[in-house]
Image (tube, rainbow, N blue to C red; front, side):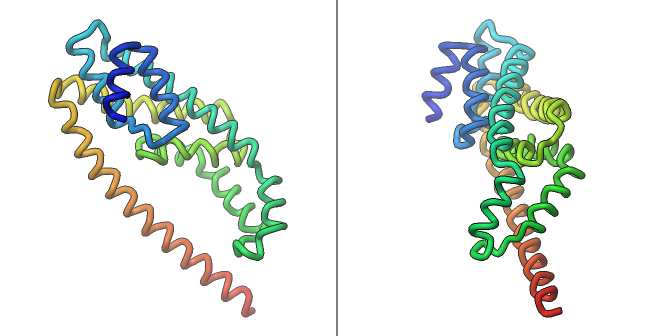
Length: 205
């Protein structure tokens, strides 16, 4: 996949970067940690510029995020309630749980979107719960753009600075990703344990 990505970018330049980053947001297995550093490296031997690559990548990020936000809108709270009505007894999820999650995202969703834009995989998927909670679209665009811009500036600049050694950054991003995923896994596991504990106590009372 890496060779296909780099060949496509070399052939189509800014347009190729825009399309691949937009697709990366919709299809997370396409790694931005390859696309962006290589885009930075391309500025060292082609007519592409660092600001141009960053702009193309950021536009692609926003377009891809908007598409997934739209997917989230199709899976709003009302539709989730219907799913819970049918399968909630199996999933051990109630309508109250859905409303709590929705209320939490209403309160902290903006900062969650911003923070997740610099975490591989989550930077794409976070757009779906944002749409599901009907997050203010303008705020979604603003914080998506800011978060994506930070991520893109960093990786493109590093790629341009490393030159032909740009693949080195992918090793460090891989370590960073594994640490973040491990932390998230622990937090999710802890949250599930706490959630079941309180549900058990509530059912006993």
